[in-house]
Image (tube, rainbow, N blue to C red; front, top):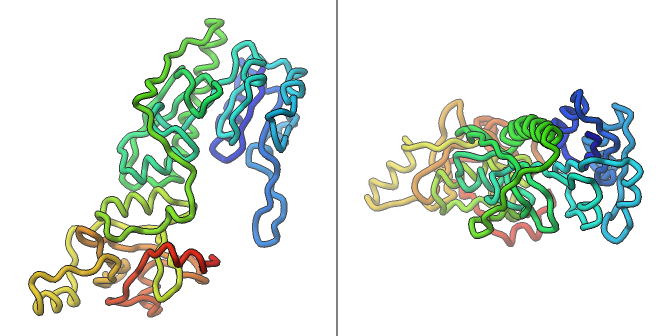
Length: 337
């Protein structure tokens, strides 16, 4: 089949590469988001999909807008049999949805109807899900509301973060997309099932404030939040008015702490305030009190510092037992990191 591919970030690259390697399908053109300024110099950076497309000599289209711009007239000369969409970043208007004979199919990084929206991978981890997956669906005018063509489940491992899970789902999704296109070509039709909209859940775009660590929550919730918020906005808290990013943590069941033993000797009912640094674990890092225990911090990035092992932060006297991390939204008003 002749294909117009629409996608933007790294997640979309495996599907594009898999289609380019296919003997049965031919990518006629690629549509992606405009180049964006990045880095300290704000130099324009092409999307990952554009780099792959140019390396294969494909026409690349980067419209600022596709609604009300007669963009279907731009695509029509490519005569696509189908449009494949993977994390393009914009909802397609009716004239594009109706352009190809087989319409538009989309790869979504969740098991729909769960986690519709912009950040399904991150919210699945944050919410402690044990299973995720990918869905191939027929696009309609809604946000991830189209009929389901195919799905494949993927286990979320205990040490998965949003980066590792995204990498896995992108590869699984690429294979499923090619298999789906093969079946459509062979049968000459798309077989699909409507979603149960009553079971829908949503995964809204992340905001920087989502990174604030709620230390009063359970340890497992904080552990999931840290993993789900990589690489942006990352989980963070404030110590002495400075932002600290928490990049790797581990749940701990017990904390052997001289500080806690001393406090308990004074008051057997003592419970450390959530966010309090309660112990140093030699060669590993430090523990921070949570709503139901403590969490071991393994890797951090203090404000204006490089990423470092938490043990290095202890050895450098950047943090010590008795310090209190606070996650106050008001701190974000003055934060510049």
